Image (cartoon, rainbow, N blue to C red; front, top):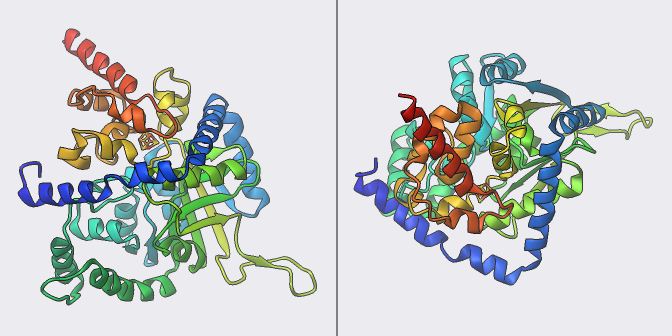
Length: 388
Ligand code: SF4
């Protein structure tokens, strides 16, 4: 892939088009910096008392009639979701890096379900059989011509010889409308979970998340435990900061979901399952995070809100995209996440490609000390070589 000229050209175009957006947003909205400090403080608080906040979040979820699950491994997470979904269902996904980490889509397909990604970029990744190449822009390496070719080959979509992004988006919209309406289950991630209210907050621009979480009778939200923040106010702040540092400010939509839809309009009796989902299941994933919360170095990575800003900035990522960083995540943040979810050994070797320029540290909204984490991993790699 790295010597593939089409991949490199697509990546260069994506990076060029993204450049400058971030600085403009922060220059026009200096108040966002203050919000980022608030999010950083909230994340630190939760990481330092992770068990307490997991417990609080689960109780709050149950209070709003959502069903809460705490799962410790990727396998347990897949089994839990499969038990809820069953088989032969139509399942729609909104983009989720945790789902990618767990290989959830593949597990659901193997169980005999029809699964559709609904985020534009993530759908292209699903159809190509690859992995997302950026946290917020998964198909960054694909030109519009490749996207059109893929859609025509896999879905039979007919596009003009010189397709515009508008034409592609419109064709995909037509195909997915029917899936949204017919889906049995919608699976989303979550930008933050408020421990005090049990509210899930999701930020987006496409409008697919509100359909995935609002139309099917069953909604499953799958989230790493590090997404818990103390209050709903912190959760909204985390979503806004994520959008701003992703270069997408103001976000088109922020969704707040506190349990299943309900109404008390008939005899003031509360009925769950009105126009939106009848069931909301929240699967909180540990998969190495709780252990990392007690680790002096790796706990810092848990502050990450996955805005992807460090990836855009990294000179190595600009050449490799997420080919470098681990099987699910990529770039500077990916190295830390790989260490947490797959183990230090797996991440240590990958860390050796880092140039230690420190540009990632400079741009992170929640001050994850990425280069220190990577430096520590490099030391682990060196000492593993010493031990032979
Ligand atoms: S480490 Fe920081 S800059 Fe990188 S994705 Fe996470 S929050 Fe964003």
